Image 1 (cartoon, rainbow, N blue to C red):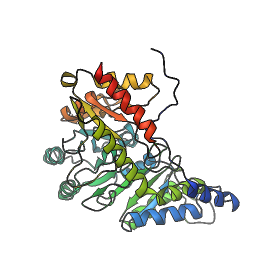
Image 2 (cartoon, helix red, strand yellow; image 1 turned 180 degrees about the horizontal axis):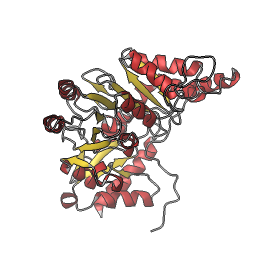
Image 3 (tube, helix red, strand yellow; image 1 turned 135 degrees about the vertical axis):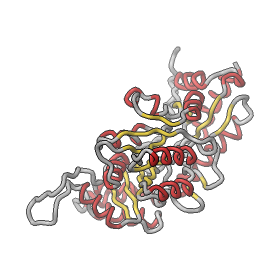
Image 4 (cartoon, rainbow, N blue to C red; image 1 turned 45 degrees about the horizontal axis):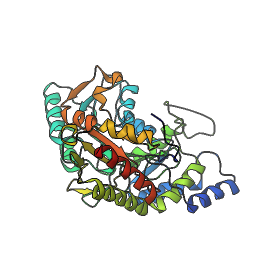
Length: 380
C-alpha cells in the first residue's frame, strides 16, 4: 500500500499561541531557566483557582504526580490498589513501582469509566478477607469524569484513599465542579497531546495543604530545612521548570477555547458520520460535561461491514493518525498475573474503539480529509 504524500494529520498535537511565548521570553530575560521560579508559582496559583482553591504542586509529569499521590496515600510493598483497567499504562505502573499490586476493575457503559458497583463489590470482598486496598485510582477517561459521588461514598465507607487520574480531563466538569478535587488527591498531565501542554509536565492537586507541602518536599529530593543538604527521607527530582511552567500559564489562559474547539470537532464528526451503520459514539454521561479530549467511537463490524482496523489502516495509508481505544491493562503482558474484576466492557471497547484526530488546532480542511477517508472505507 502506497502512503499518501499529503501532510500528516496528528491525533492531538500541541496548540501554542503568543501568550506562551511571552511567559517563556520572560523566563529567558530574567535568567529563570532553572527549576522553580515565578512562572511555577504563577502556574500553581492559576491552576488552584481553576480547582476551587485546592493546593497544587507543579511537577515534571502526570506520572510523577500519580507516583507521589500513591506514596502519600501510604501505598507500599504488599499493598493492593484498585485501578481502572481501561486506561494508559501510566495509571498503573507507579503502583507496581511502589511494590504494590494493581487490582483492575472494568468500565461501565454510561461513561466508559470505572464501574462504581464493581468497586463496591471489590472493597466489600476485600474487607471481608481483612485486606482492604490502600487506594482506588479512578481514571477520567478521554476527557470525561467517572461517576464520582458513589466512588467517594464507597471509599469513605471503607477508609480507602480515592485518587483521581484526571490526566485526560482538564476542563471537564462533574455536577458543575472540576475533577481532581473530590478524592484525597487528583493528578493532571500536560504532555504534548493533552488539552493544554507544558511540553512535559503534570500537577498534583489536593484540598489537604499538608499533603501538597509534603509532595513539594519529596519532589525536590526531600531536602530538610537546613543550610546544608540534609535528608531524613528519600525523594525525587520531580519539580517543573520555570520555562515549562511559562508555557503552561499561556495555555491555561486559553483553556475554555481549547475545550470548546474539541467539543465542536466531536460534534462535526458525529453530524457527518453518525448515520453510518454500526458506528456509535462515546456517550456523554448525565453528571457532567466532557472535554472530548479525543473523539472516540466504536464500529460494530457485523453491522458496519467494516472493522475498526479497516478504518485505522486506511487512515494511516492517507497519512492520518488514528488509534485504537486504550488496550485494557488486564490484557497487557506486563500485568498478566494481575487480578481483574469484570473486563467484558473494556475488552469490547478496545476491540471496536477508534480515536480520531481531535486537536484544538485541527483545521476544517484537515477534518474534511478525515471524514472523507472514513466515508470511503464504508462505501467500498
